[in-house]
Image 1 (cartoon, rainbow, N blue to C red):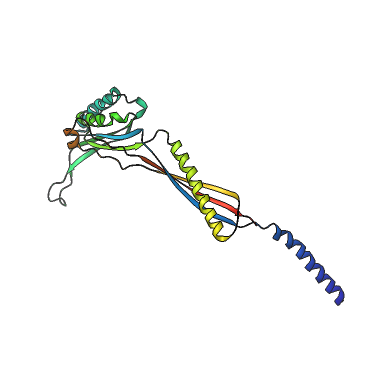
Image 2: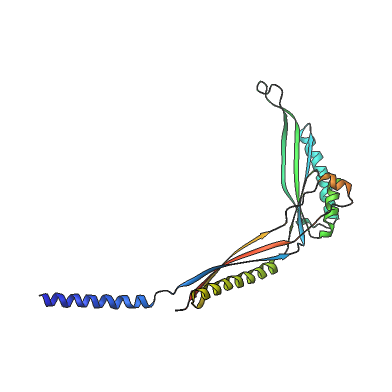
Length: 238
């Protein structure tokens, strides 16, 4: 009986070793994970301008009519300057009552003293040489708020592709440095993941005082930066 139990135990041990051996042989190799970063710059070829017309009057109707007349002139001027219809878009519109608070405020409710109409037009300017003139002209036509300018690129793909290539080279360089320091060799690339972001110059704010004193508003477009980060996983040769 003891010999039979011993034989059964030996058989189970042999089978367990046979099952474990292939698993150990096929265990995944080690890997090195690195991150690469790169940035590419591109001069902007377009600008987006926010132009706001605000008008106040005793009634909502009067305020709306005054605002609509001023904004119609602004839109007509943009079109006359070469801005295409698809590059003009109303981005914000609102009618609000304007209150006055009799004193003492805690004894009497606020009273409507008039109405304010606010209309914002988003304009894409593709001829940057005309930007300063358009800003100056918009103020002359009644724009009295906004004027923020953000610069962009109609097709930033070449800059982003250049940043991608540099980011991968940066990640590979780091992986080679790590492998050399550890005394191992790099194998195949397992995966590459990407994170893309962009940063633009801060918007240039147009002041009415500056616009009134110059033939055109001075504008500095700067450059746009496109940053790419990649994560690289590479096997370590056994």
